[in-house]
Length: 193
Image 1 (spheres, rainbow, N blue to C red):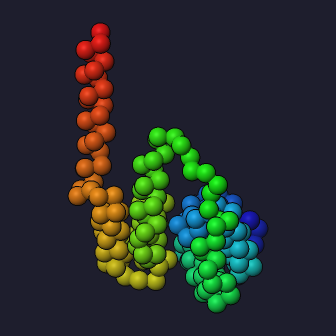
Image 2 (cartoon, one colour):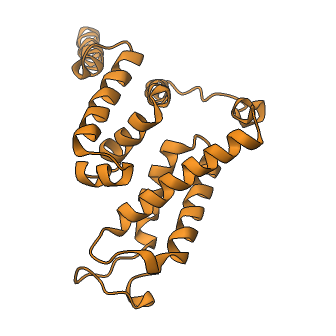
Image 3 (cartoon, rainbow, N blue to C red):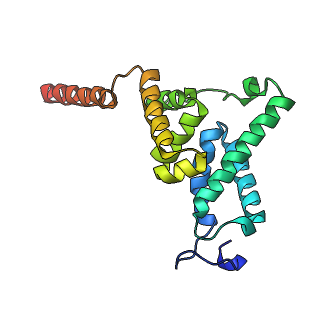
């Protein structure tokens, strides 16, 4: 679906397609939903709401930001409804994986993911929008309904929180152990030759 298909004036000369925004919507949905199927459901519901309310989209604004706002509001509405309807659902054993992956390379990724999940939702949301999806501070402020300064503060606290959960004092500390391991690896390789 695009602006032209709905006879809406396009704010720029290029045509914007909702379909091209699906990967970004999926990535943003993952900040809210730990289960990939739930994230896909959230994307689908967002697209359904967006398409059914396309006449309310204001030309001259960014479609991506508008859809992100719809997704965020949809998620929080779902959370409120779930809290009323099914207490204990988040702790359900059936939603946990049967076995954890055993690959060594995934350990650090899992630790970072867990650290991000421990953040308050407003910090996690800003970290994903800016750090992962590359959304600007201004757009993030619009999506989250707060000031740009608040977005910057939340992002700073999110970064510090992730480092704290990982037991690191600086972002550089996460890189140094790998470099040291690599250097030691090359030294032992040289001694073997």
